[in-house]
Image (cartoon, rainbow, N blue to C red; front, top):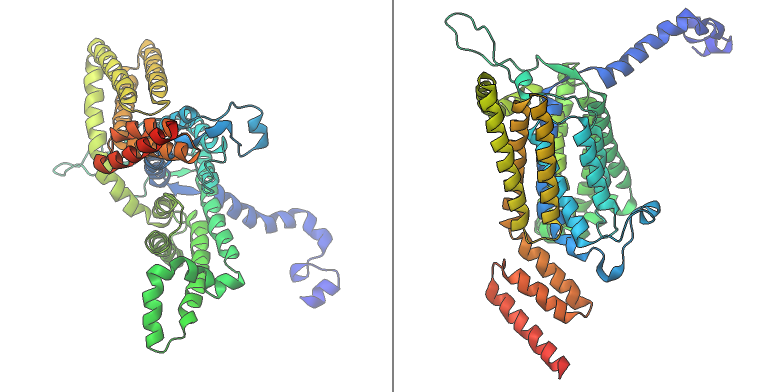
Length: 488
């Protein structure tokens, strides 16, 4: 080869000038084909379908249970700085009502998109609302928001899929045989958005692995500081049997680096998992799945990291990308086939009696709008009533348009999805201690800033939802005595 190159020839003795014509096309064609197959090849349709459904449900409850309680500090003292300087010039001062209302709206819209066959525009609106919710202020400095916004942006370009297309029943079963569900893997789609998200996830793991190639991490110092309390007994036991004290931490540091490299490779290869059924590919993705799940479970159990629900998002992504599509199909069919059959029965009933279907749909829309408004009023949170009224108004307006276009089935389905999302919002935010936590945090913040009178009012509102009212009463009594002494 060196001899050929020194004589001015390319591979196998081909001269460079000869490679600019048809020969170059023949050489590049396999690379172009591989590139196209990677981004546009067949993907089991159950993967993007389940990913959108499950991850949006996790996003909704994450916002309600984990983000809403922190909304009381927005705009405190008339101060707020956005994540981007240009945003400060456009937006008003962030307030608790704006942030809490946005998080409630994000949860409602996320569940609505998960329960219905939402198109690109609702998913794009969800990505914009979620991104603005964290970008409006550095008060929400959770670094993984950037990644979740990228996930929601790629969802915009995911294919629009229906449950009956994935879990359909044979229309004409053989005589004497029961109807069979469509076997796994028969429906594939092309989705460059799904492939792009897989690559981005691989980049996340690869980057975190590179950042761990640090002397302090490789020596085990970082893990010793983070997991000393939980893993310290294991290190002490190993030291008792003659293992050097620092070896456990060094081995774990190198092990995490190797594990994240494996997971990164697994996500990058998982994009073609349904195109190339190779044993080695399945082996790598299975190992990457086990590594990702065990890594994030151990992170939640053993390390005191303030990362919210990020581990749960990554476990969902690992399940969808790295597990076999046949297993995902069985899991999806277990949940969605009964719902699909029930929905088909309702649609058939509406289709057989159009006038009665329009009347039933109108009743359902009005009832769902009432449920949404009632759920917002039941939540003692700033912005909740405004969001509920806007959501109910949007439902009514969209339903009127659908009824005019003689599509009562679609309007009926949207009404049920909106009403169910509102009930889940009320259950998550109103029956889980979130109201107490929100008002208690507001009181603590006001007291820290020296406004004890307003803090007492916040604690009185928190008392309505306190799991232990007696303890809060004792604290409020001390605060009242301090205020009385200050007035004297």
